[in-house]
Image (cartoon, rainbow, N blue to C red; front, top):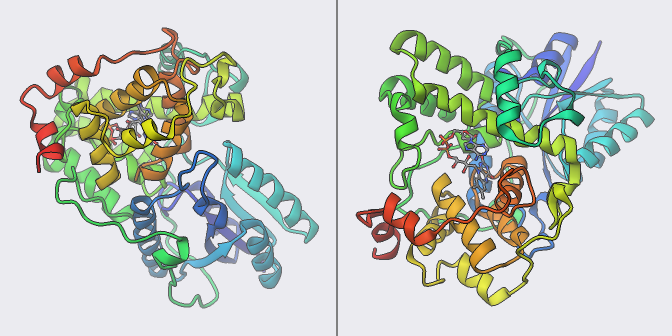
Length: 430
Ligand code: FAD
């Protein structure tokens, strides 16, 4: 009898999850596990927590939903805590598992854990099988090898759009055979060294974790209100739930896959028509892929001050007082402060806001951009290692921007994007 472990990480879904699909297809018995790894709850070298309370809450909700879905198939979710390598090896030996299925990692920390786990499992006669489940395009379908990924997004995009195809999704398996799995026991916030986040009624949207909620949001944005048909015109907005898709938190922990979104988009276009706005979502999802493949190409260089260009960064200061004013929305520049308060009190910020506050930290305060990236890592409900560090290094002029350093004139941006001050009033006056 073949027994496998499915190690869920940032792929917290059963639909379009090749890892789960293959495990079910190739095993008699599966043990789905999730591990709260200690290292994800430590303080980074930049003084911020690696996971803050907004994302932790979203994660707990996502796991609850994953467990419920697994129970419908006849299984459940086993929660582990501590060191993933040790914990998974112990479970594998206890149940005599021959294979551990997991999503393929390409970024620093996670890749390292994957390599070490592979070694440890081999020692007990178990194999680690990994599948890349977080991209729109599969690496094998790209018109270039990873080492040849163009450094300019537009070059990458044009060639990919022309020469590669997006694969269909993997359907949810109909059954999962597992030994009896006791009811889900999630850690309390205190056990993760965090406290429960407060709800701020000014937040753009109430995010609830899990694939079910992710799909509800998808249906809402597409067929219920048809906002996708005007997305390109509204996506630079600042106030409210629907100026942009808000898919990012579900994408970040894998409750939704970008391929699921893409195929739903195609169905929507078939019924309601395609336009520039519907295309633009695929365009943005391609940015998401791009940062993933760029990290795969350059590895840990993306986390260095000089970035993938190994150049002297323009922003190098370490000034705790200035940094603290930025973090707490006390710089005196109202557009920056409003955005930073939104992030602090809700765990979210628009793309327009992110570009402006990042440019302000880099160009005006001249602080080492990595402090900004590390604060975003702590605070963002949608934090994703690739999109976050990729965008930050891009704006700092040490990443993939062919134009070099980007400067956003914050005052002008505020005048243009928040002409009636409604965004600033929301966060500064109430
Ligand atoms: P939409 O505008 O509706 O876009 C749809 C999807 O496309 C997003 O959910 C996202 O998956 C993808 N996308 C859009 N813009 C980008 C982009 N510039 N780069 C990569 N993917 C993109 N996004 C994250 O998901 N996690 C992060 O940690 C993150 N950090 C960022 C840091 C900085 C400094 C900047 C400038 C951008 C960052 N982004 C990050 C990208 C972008 O701001 C968010 O994806 C977006 O604001 C999320 O809201 P949405 O889902 O409504 O976006």
